[in-house]
Image (cartoon, rainbow, N blue to C red; front, side, top):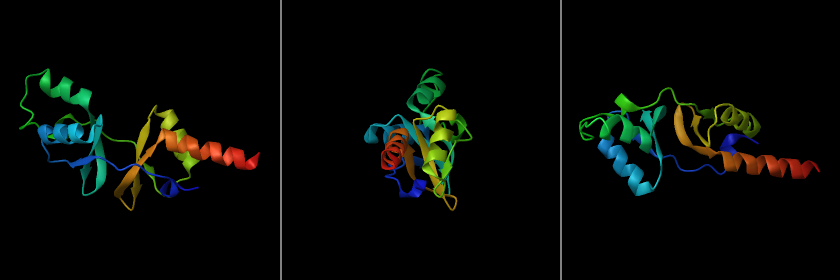
Length: 129
């Protein structure tokens, strides 16, 4: 089964020119811990709530003037929509990721969670048994 056929989670993202304040508001509203930074719909980095606290709040910087691209972790690991889920699973395990952005034609289409990948692997195993 290809990644694009899995139940992908909606990706929380912001444009690379966004302020950290805007990203933090999006994180709060969505009740998420990570936000992807995109450039023309392609993920180029990721920011966590901890990154915001460490790089902005604890440093006394103004979240309204600091840009997300200044504190993002880059590059971000992603998988292709046409990849097999088992391959994506091993990529995620190898990088200790609980979720991974999914790209199709250089565009972010969703997020594959480790839970969804494991669900597929279990179903495939049960079908063979």
